[in-house]
Length: 58
Image 1 (cartoon, helix red, strand yellow):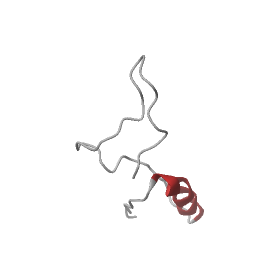
Image 2 (cartoon, one colour):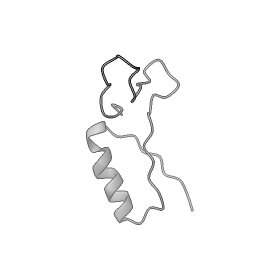
Image 3 (cartoon, rainbow, N blue to C red):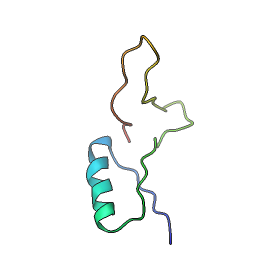
């Protein structure tokens, strides 16, 4: 068993995840490629703030 890490634009994440599952991947996880950096984006807004976009840019 091995782990494969890919970086792709937000608009292709669902198609890539579906393709990996069709190839019988045991699991597919989506994470923020910029986590821990100044470019990190939150997916959940703070109370009273507008909701952020629906996914990470990459």
